[in-house]
Image 1: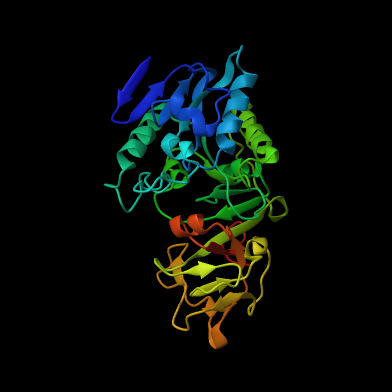
Image 2: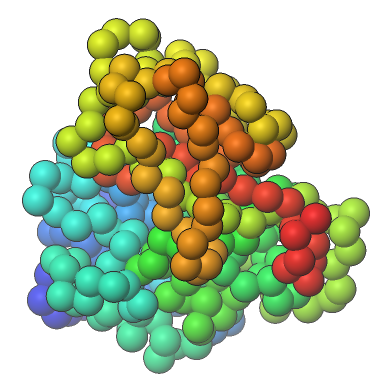
Length: 344
């Protein structure tokens, strides 16, 4: 059965060629964003989303590996697999020019009329009617980051689900409109960051997570201790102002970031740590709240044109990829928290 609603295709079987198809070739196999509704012994489904960003293909590879594993036998649990930005994948881009980010359009987005929001709403409502056991959104990143999981709630099932992937867990409230936050209304929901796209370890790690969740009777609700997790919270999102120039090799720009800045990810940085220098004395980085606090305060000092931290932080998602910075942000700044959410 192939039922279309707007631009969403729903399939209850795997089309020929899908299991061995590279992300950039999916346009030859799928008509566009596709939701696979695949039956299993336990009818309550696991929801998995992949390729919300077209150049992050580890989730697709992991889903393909899992489905190959069960090719000639029944899935232990039904699977709702959403394959997102097929068009951007064909160009190996996060999003195509003129597209809205596929991971900023889910219910709760501040831009509900944005292109893609109706599609995301359809997927969400289809899944909601099926009462999913859990939701996993699989991503890669462009800088040097460990594999880690992200959650929007500190409830035990969310933390236990995240622990299946990594003891490093990031609690976040911003940006709005992400898949993980929307699905947290329905079930324990996580985003997993698998490191750089193309790495075999990324695919293997994501495959292990999918197969573990398909085999579980339920998501554990047992207590978690501080020894079990390395828990952080995103406090601010740092952006380069739109239109501002920046470089990583010392070349002329308003922001001249250090060349090894992406190696600072998940490091404990003290106040005074340098991010680089200013080429324009009036340039300033944009600081947005990452946890809903209206005024997060200053995180950088610019005296003598040095870009230095004003407080101790742990950065994530720092990258040298200019396009990724333009489309998303320079980085997230985090602090350690306890299981009750209080900052350490």
